[in-house]
Image 1 (cartoon, rainbow, N blue to C red):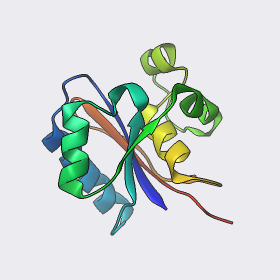
Image 2: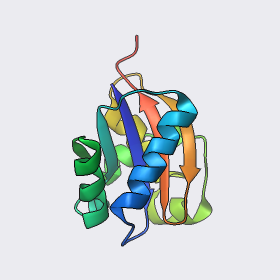
Image 3: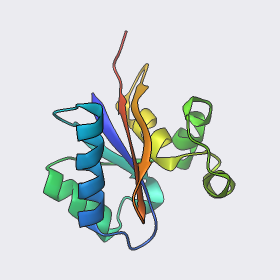
Length: 125
């Protein structure tokens, strides 16, 4: 299972999310995704739901507890994000949490103006 994890500021547009996800897929040479994940508090934001619909992916809300459980596995560390969410990268932790067992990052966090994106693959032996 390959998941794009999304971190975003309130009000981020669906188009900005879609553009960054497509850039991440190209950067990682990934042809398909199985889901779009973000922090539970952002999963109902119009930009996120719009992006999931445009990409034809299920939106996967990640609980704060599940996010923090992946804190040791993230590669990128933002002090501001860590202070807010207890993890250095919402995008990386969301992707890892939603991808399932033995998940690993395929692409560390990349960023645009209001969105971050990371890719993780799970279900690995």
